[in-house]
Image (cartoon, rainbow, N blue to C red; front, side, top):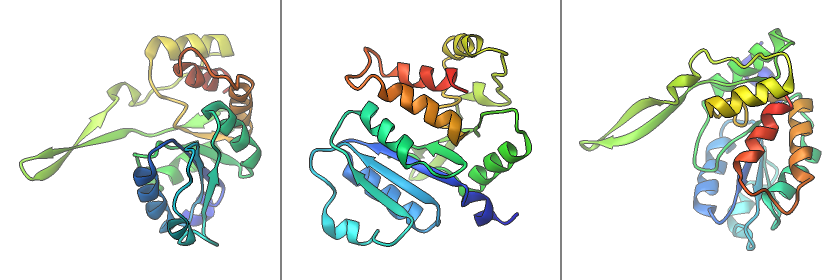
Length: 201
């Protein structure tokens, strides 16, 4: 299948709060890639209209939602209408070809709920940019325990962001986000969101 044929089955959700400069940069990046992108902005004041005009009738969907992150994820679950979904930080980027490989893997292996790649961190070094692998424990990582409880224990023990920022099947992701949204006043620790996400896969 061609690249865009695979990626047409994927939606990206970018939660953001008080970071318009970062998310605007991200919107410009994805605007050139053609993927279906949803920005979930919890900031009280929305992004300037002149900036949003550039996104009109494009693949970038800006949602001004001045509410909790839990409520925004609940709204996102209602917006998701593609077979696969992935969450992205407003200050990070995915490589489209890597997303394609994740979608391809999920298409071919129906018994897994999520697929992710490896991370690179970029650092200034003598007027140049150096790239180094991050989260080395993610290489060849699998969490294929037979029950949700076992997968949760494995996830919490390893403390790896192995699922939350992974490409997921939409049904798995919606279950997770609806569970998160059932606590609209928030959690004592935001890390609980990623734990819920893991138990649902």
